Image 1 (cartoon, one colour):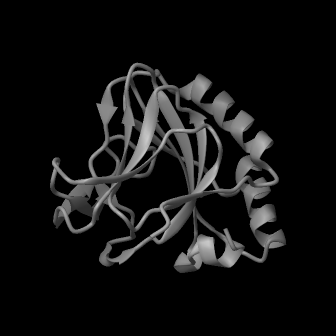
Image 2: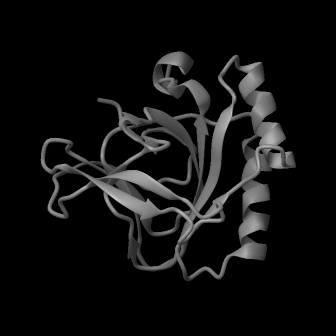
Length: 189
């Protein structure tokens, strides 16, 4: 089971710089915040142009996940919409600021999934909406992998995982595509 694979988009440098400028203008570097970016922005259009050039599906979501120091995200699997049975397979992951932080995956059989209604607007720039989230309920789950490099990767989002920040703030860009494809297979990485 592949958890991540190095993959750098052609527009990586522009995307990373745009995200850095965005969080410097909008984030306090202390709180947890999810910024949902507009697919029709300059950044979104650059990403979509690359997806089109690579014959990939269109963008479904572009999000910057920001966490202040000493924060552990809940262990979860990435779902699609309000259907808890549809789990997002993979996504592009671009570290923006990750000093002393990690993305950690957990053994899917060492815990259990719990369906939970979550107010997505609590820490998100999305409009207020309640969504059904698939939360992995076991803080003692067995760790099976960790990624803490500043290199961009494709990540497995169907395996329970979470982001952990330690001494410094953390920010990463997450890109999801329509049609729920397996990017490892499609891109041969």
